[in-house]
Image (tube, rainbow, N blue to C red):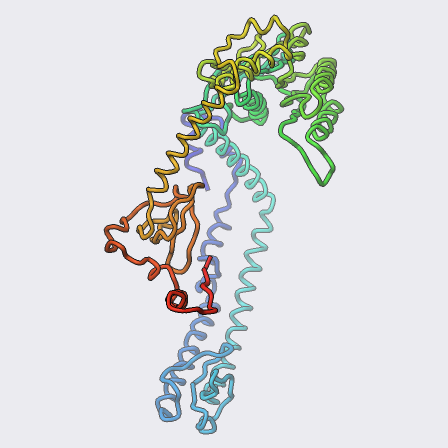
Length: 535
């Protein structure tokens, strides 16, 4: 069968369309299958013998039904019901227990109460035997037809296998095309010069409407980049973006860039994430080292490696030393690599080492917000002092921290605008605490006992039986139970003031009858009864 869309593609010079020439058809086999198989079963008209047999089966089944109806009409007073039934594939009539001997036949079942017997009348049994014989003839005829079709298909095995291979190839090509359209991807250029250039790149799983495009370049003598910057600044997502686009290009996919020039790599390695495993007695640091040592054993000059937070998870001085040793080993192998770090020593190492450069993730110190833009050729900073200062750390504490981290000269370079002692900072926290308490008070007044509310996401209606507590949780009486739920999942439907008169006793709604009686007894006299609360 010719594929119309492939034939049409030849008119536009589409090379994929010429796969159609490798698809073979067999009109005789196709017509034979279409004639004999319909709706997943052998068709009645597949052969004259099958058609005749199935007509006989239908006729015999109708005779059985008619015979059952006739018996029930002529013995109406013996029947427990007005219709026949089927037990174990055989038609039976429901006969009252006291009249079971009046209907000759075989008892095939009994009702749950024992008052009704299901009997296959003897006059129907002969039709059932005839029916079974016809079904055996039908089954043999179906097998013969299927055997014939199977042998015809087997004779075309080579053609079918080739068609399957071509169709799989086409399906893969169309899937890649659909993915490219969905991702708004572009065709990359491929080079053999160990160079990676990405323009307006983005992570393939990120929304292109909110993603900040990445500008990236390495190669031409620069095989390693040390990326620094603040936490949540985008370092990890940046190195993931680079590697994912390289892998996509090597898999024959379009890349999520405006333009790209990518080299092919013999292998890709990464060390990202915690990797802690109690079952294997691996700490965070142990897991990183185990993974990195595996990378160093396998990596060569045609490899591409990314490592996140190199040297983290242990003593900073020792972690820094190990990080530099790993970078030295990667440099010796000649592979391309991207690593992220917070160690200032690694920035200095990249500055003085040929073939390795720094890169930083931009950060707005005024708003304390990352810009998510990589600047290659410059070292970044963690901005911990700026973030701590903007969040309220006193200037005296910041000076102490900077002095011990970088020395006296560094203190002069930092612009410190905070209060000079921790007491003033605490006052600021007190103001915030008062504000939070005010918000909690407003929240407690939002819902009152007896309010009719809607509970999401199920949109069930309930009645507030306990107001919002300091954690923002209230209690709601549903149809069959009481639940604790966060106020954000509740919406006021009708206020209690509109539903009940002033001074209404809500115990009538929320308490059980036994509890109300016990409480009434307690008000009048001594009692040893207790009030039970349903939690």
